[in-house]
Each structure stands twice: as C-alpha cells, then as structure tokens.
Length: 263
Image 1 (spheres, rainbow, N blue to C red):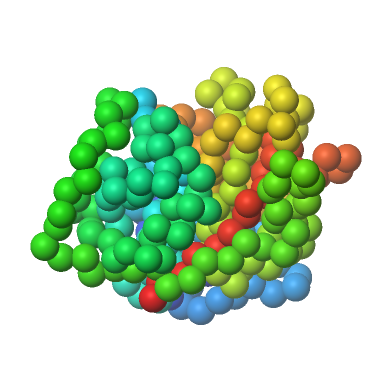
Image 2: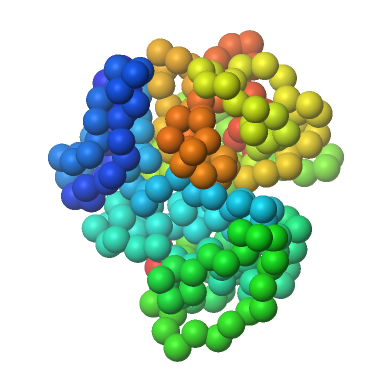
C-alpha cells in the first residue's frame, strides 16, 4: 500500500486489504511474499495484510486487549497459520485489567502468556456495547502466547519515559510483524486524513489508548496505525502518524512498544 518500495513480511498469507485507489497505492489483494524481504535499503512497509480487518472496540475501552490479540494473530499468520484469538476472553477473563474501563497491554500480554486462548469464532467479541461480560469457560483453548518483548528503550514509568528509536521500531516490524504501542488518542476520532504531525492534548502525559503499528512510509515519515475505530474510520480503518523531525514520537507512539510471538 505504499507509493515507494513495499516491504512484505509474510509466509504465504493472501490478505484482503483493499488499496486506496484515490491515493494511487498498490494493491495487496494477493501478496506474493513468501519470506522476510526487509533489507537495509527498504524504506516502506505495510503489514496490514497479516490481519483480517481493521479492529473495532466500539463502545468498550478494550484497545489494551485487542492490540496484543491482533499482534498475536499476525504473528501466527507469519508462520502460515490463519488464526484469530478471542479478544473477548482477554477482556472478560483478565482480572488484572479493567475490561471495558481500560487496561494495560503489558498485563494483557502477561495474561496471554499464562493462559491458553480460545478462538474468536468460539468466543466472539460481544463487549462492543460497553459491557465487559462474565468470563466463560471454553472446551478448547488451542492458542497461546509464547513470548513478548518490549523494544529496547520502550520504557513507560511515572519517573521517566524513554522511547525506542525509529530504526529500532522498523527493525522490529520487519523481524516480528505489527507492534503494540501505547498512544495519546484524544484527537484520533477527528482524523481528517493525511499524516498526524501536531501535538496531542497532554501528549506523553495522557497515554489513553493502545494501538497497533502495522507499517511505515519514509516518504511520509509516518507510521501506519490501527487505532481500533473500525473499517469506516480514516483510511479503511487506519491512519498515518508522523515519526519525522522535530518530533519523532507524535502522540506518544513508541511507549510500551512490544512484539509478540506464539508458543
């Protein structure tokens, strides 16, 4: 989906993501990539084809659960497995976090590491109306997170916040697929298109949501991000957020950035 060189990271998964014809982007209806093609000379990537669709939490504040679940789905697909793990299980059963009232993707990842996960088809997302729901026992839990890792520098503490470099984030996208990140999403719902490059209200002091970084474009100097507002939002559910100078981490993108891999 880039005007410039595409970096495709997949193992034979034919994604559905439709090109934005009005922007002149290439189509990824039938990506041919079989191996990791990231090289030092590549300057664009789009990994959204690893996902079934742009996510939507609707009226539930569950991006903290949806982002790591989608990242794990993408990691499975890079291994050749078409998987959708249950977001609802994480929302309803991870008692460390707050369901529709919000949570932390790091503790969600810890839950996913400790508990096997049901398939989305068996335990579908029902919290869109704002109800966290009661944790339900399933007969089959075929999936599990094997590991997750914060990127070097992706600290997020009350005493000091550091961020991974843009190069580190690109390398992680190439090596591991979509990245989970905290973000200040206060103004995201008003996204008009183009690249978000201005300050967000409160910026790094108000990390109000979790997003999934699915690619980048050096021509735009921007990350391609899913804020989980649904496919009708922005660019088929996605938006561009700047990593260009002078501010490389617009709206806090990069805080708590991490990748996940299946067991």
